[in-house]
Image (cartoon, rainbow, N blue to C red; front, side, top):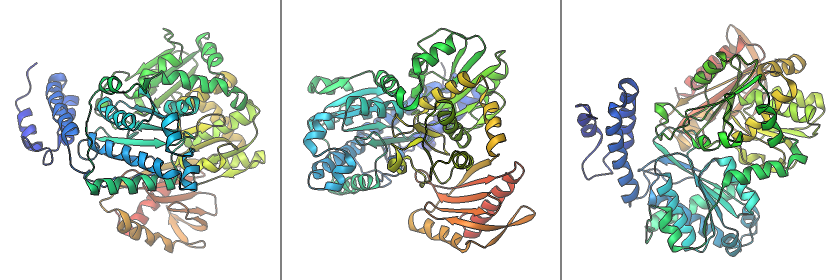
Length: 578
């Protein structure tokens, strides 16, 4: 295949021969992918060549990351080659191991990690995996080498999802897991997630220790004696590196805990396969879920299961790989053309910790689905208990819980903040399409969401939109929306700008559309959430994972949502952020 003449111009624009630091390989790749989207596969050889340059940088980079290593609510994320490369992931892995070495003399840290000392951590071992990102196997091999060379047992899952790896921690009684993923971030990103022995996102004390240790090691000039680029190299050197089938452990966890949540994986899948009035369509967006969906459905050849974007593609076909309205359109089109009356569509992000639904007519985000899951477990499965949801999430679940006489737990954004109620909440979810349930992992998991949705349809004989309408008829309708703006400032400077929102206090009157509304309550546990007298609200907070400020709104009528979005944007303009 002939490479287009102007490909050379792009390479000259983005690269400097022999100088990784001055080259922008991911910028080049994104440009080439855009050309491929418009002009076809003639651009694929150039993309392959650009990725070869990026791989060389990932292997050869001996510098510190461009951005200082920092663990947030979902681990550490950065640009491939510039922040995420063999040396940097080795450095972070060593930082984690040094944290375990200090646990024996730090009772609180030991409690948060769920192990007494480093010896216990070495024996129980680490579950290691990665999503579909470029250089995942090479990065994982380096992490495996660092772990194994320090005597840590490595349970190697290979490419897998966050929820599946968390289940493996519980089933294997491992000390911790490492998942090399930046979740739903664009193709230029890599990432590193760490979960401790409880299989949930690490507590702040733990992430602070990792960040501090990584910073110190970077300053000291940490280097690895060897940087293997294949698992075979590591397995040949260490007998305590063991490959295993991670999805099998996930299925066993679900089956073992039927008595707690009432979900029956085998029965539900068999019931679906035995019907002729249902269709399930899943969009994997080329992520790790593409390896599991058909197996979850017993590898059936039925035409009632449709799986799309299930090929290996580290560029995600040129789209932002997140569950979104735009990305959902292929599934919507498929469902509209199907004759079956019961239709379930889902889109899953690359590491399988986020999921969004459609029935072909109605899009169901986690604001609604989390509330539906709570109603379903409480009323159809007969489980009693509280609901846990982040403060940025719709109040539909609040209305349901209040009617049931159950408690509501509303922490700041971040799944780690559900830890205090993991054993008490039937459902815990956040507005950004993450969910888990009682008897499952304390980590968000798209697959448990998919099973919930399937069981809802089987039990109610309704599409999700119909089930939601029935719930809203009884408990009230809520209309949430969210968006965000990219910012060039960060840290204290960003927080100082956002502090300008503190002038909005209870009693303040704000223009919303053509009317005014009075603030009844302010919640400042995570950004600033302003709740109005009519029950509508808006919230503004800095993102913990991207250079963005996010805002969330909820109206009690459909027409009012846009007015609240406009008000949130005007507030950001006032602060000087926009």
